Image (cartoon, rainbow, N blue to C red; front, side, top):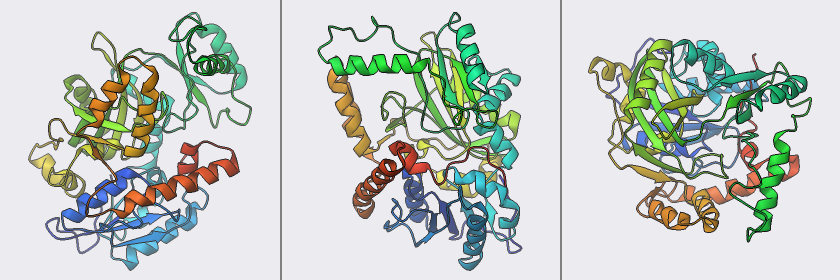
Length: 432
C-alpha cells in the first residue's frame, strides 16, 4: 500500500476527502456510507452512467471517468485531475480499477495517499497460477494446480489428469467464477433420467459434455492461460482483510453458501470464526508484506483441512459484515495506529448481510432440493439487505436500472450479465 503523504500530511481525526472507485459495486456503497457516518466527505469516480453510488446521500459528488480498461492513460489523467481539483486526501480503489491505479500510483501519490500495492505484487496475487505457486512456496495448503497455455496442452492435460481425479478448469484472469468449468457429473449423480424436471437433467448433461471441449484459440494462449486445479470437495469459505505492511488490521471469514448460479458470485454473507483460515491468511500476509485490501477463497474439507483456491487483491464482500462504528474505517484510514496497538478489527458475532435481488433468485433454485427452501428462508430472515437503507433509499431503486442497462449490454455484445457489469474495468494482465 502506498502511504506517501502530501507535504501538509493528514490528521486522521479530521474529516478527510475520500475518493472511491467502482461506484457500481455494493461494497463501494457500503463503505461510502460508513465513511460518511464517520464524518468524512466521500466522492466516487465511475466509468458508467448508472451505478449504486450515483444517487446515494452518503456521496458528495460522483464523477464520470474514462474506462480504465479501454482508455487507461486518459483514466489516470482524469483521476489525477480529480484528486487535485477536489483536494482528495485518500484514494481507495475498490474493484479491479486497483490494477490501473497501481500503474499510475507514483504520480497520484504526489497529491494524496493511495491505498494500493505495487502492480507487480498485485499481478502475482491476481494470477490464479502464480498465486498458488507463491502460497505453496510459503508451505501453505493449496490444491494441485497446473498451467495450461494452449488448446493442445488442454487436451494433453485432460488425457493425463482424468485418471488422477476431478479437476476444475478456469482462466488465470477471471472474476466471479466467470467461465469456470466444474467437474462433470455422472449420469447417476444428483440427477437421473427419471427425475421430474428433465430440463435440469439435460442442462447438467450439456455441462458434462462441454467440460471436455477446450476453449477457442482466442480464449486460451500463453498471454491468457488457464489452470487445471484439483477439485476439493467441501464447504466454500471466503475472507476479507485490510493489511498494513504484513500485519492484518481488519479481518473476517465468511460463509457464502448462496451464490448466483452454482459457483458464481456470493449473494449471502455470514461472519464465522475459523482459526485455521485466519492463521493461513496471517502467515500469507506476513510473508508477502502485503498492504491494502485482500480476499481469499477457501475450501474446507469434511476432516477440517483448508485449501486456498484463489486470491482477490482488492475489496471483497466481507466489507458488508462490518457496520458503522466497528472500526473498518479506521483500519483503512489509519492502519498504522492499529498495528501499533496490536489490534485487529472484526465484525460482531452473528453479523450477516445479503444482496436482496440475487438472493431471491437463489431462493428459486432451492425449490428443487429437499429442505433447501426452509434453510434458505432461515438465512433470509433477520439478514439486512446491503443496498436498502431507510434514510438512503435511492440506490435501492437505482439497482433496477443498473441491471436493465447491463442486460442490454450483454445482449448487444453476446456476453454474460456478470461480464457486462465488469467489462470496462476488469484487468487481464495488460501493462501500460
